[in-house]
Length: 283
Ligand code: NAP
Image 1 (cartoon, rainbow, N blue to C red):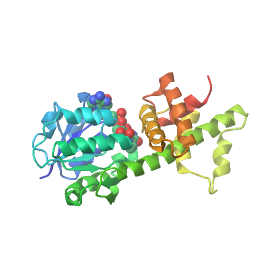
Image 2 (tube, helix red, strand yellow):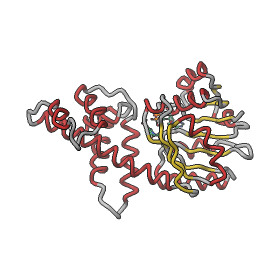
Image 3 (cartoon, rainbow, N blue to C red):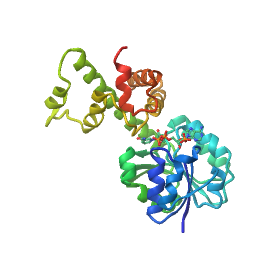
Image 4 (cartoon, rainbow, N blue to C red):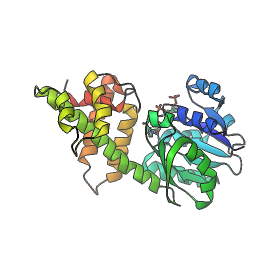
């Protein structure tokens, strides 16, 4: 049976690890805050006391941690068995995916750059989309994992990096949509327009967007149960702005970043990214 060491059982990692066990893989999960991994024991996952313990003799290592520096730090403390391959699903950005890929190569560990699209509910329902880049010979080994966590895998190339680049492109869109929803709803309130009219008028038009309907009601209620924490959305907005560099002006992502940073400063870092609204409204 394939043994999978799963590191990071947060909002995304926990249901992903559960789905791997449900698919019949032998899963050992580790999380810095052990209490967040413990419920997985009831779902057939062995909860490890350390990352090193989780990876001992594993066929595959999956990382689903907050960001590049965290992944690098956790990986640097591991001694992988020969033959363990690493599927890196966290969103780390272009610079860090390069560094992680180099760290893997230096340690002789085959590496797949495989960020995922989809949030908490798609993760629970095994409906993530996997964007994957890595050596051809790893594809068969990675497929049972990708099939267990997602509904679609796109292999984008043999070189790690291209999957992360596509993830950055998609995140620029998602951040712009969320920020735009917040700006229109805040503007409606400021101008004395019933914000519900924003949704009424878009209904059935080409500019109707399900995402606005997911995030908008949270903004109007001022209640933000996290599917994607605002602090990590700010990290992703920063990755978009960094990726654009001096080549193009990503003013939409930069605006999302400024508003997310303001929301985080106001104490909404652990709230859903819809709390960008709290950074839009001037206090
Ligand atoms: P999350 O619930 O905040 O999980 C973050 C994970 O990273 C937790 O396991 C956390 O451990 C761990 N971590 C943070 N700092 C650490 C450190 N210094 N050392 C060890 N572990 C550390 O966030 P998430 O939503 O699952 O996101 C995980 C990754 O997936 C991020 O890269 C995110 O951008 C990406 N992503 C998220 C979504 C989404 O919609 N949520 C969608 C696609 C991709 P603790 O529990 O101990 O804090």
